[in-house]
Length: 271
Image 1 (cartoon, rainbow, N blue to C red):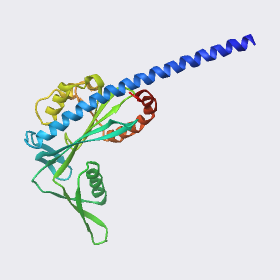
Image 2 (image 1 turned 90 degrees about the horizontal axis):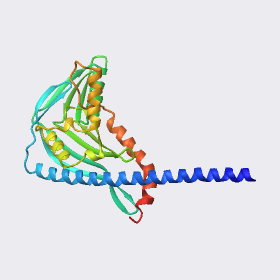
Image 3 (image 1 turned 180 degrees about the vertical axis):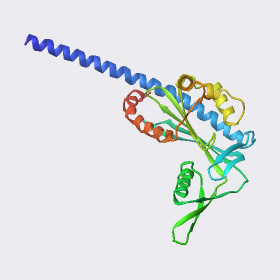
């Protein structure tokens, strides 16, 4: 029995160590969670104030968009700023989950053009859908009864999205921007300690088309810039990664957060 007693003590020691590590990890996640909540709250209040002022005084520069099939339109005016949030409840307490800053860029120009050929017509539809542009499509059939031409009329309002999310486990703030620099999607990653009022000021100036250091901020962006410089030393360096699938990936990451909240909930309870 002496051997079994020693084996039992060893197993209990290992289990105790594992329990302590689990508790420490849960505490670390909780600290990250609360710190990131404070940053998200600060960002939310800043954007609410920004949107309120921009809806009274328009100071954003006109933006240019290239629309496939039509060409460039240079007089899109930003307007209708709205800030919303998705929230989650833990022990009857509300916390930020996702923040949204939305606005539209509107032009007075009519955007109408034709596409020939069934494949070109379908590709144009997919392009406009992926860009979240509203449009009408009138199809025309040839003598054989098949569609060989279509006339597209695209709305003269382009929706712009700035979406904030969080990876609580890694301690990262994720900012997804769609339809701001053309009909594109960009994802930016920041450590939680990089989000402060000066950061928000640079982001605001960037969104208003004013001189800004926003694209130079953040350790993750700098690391990406260096990697691109090494791989393509003679090309222009992109500070951000064009990633049309970024929004879907952020949604998947938000789903993954749910598994963390069980551990966090027990530590927040009664706090």
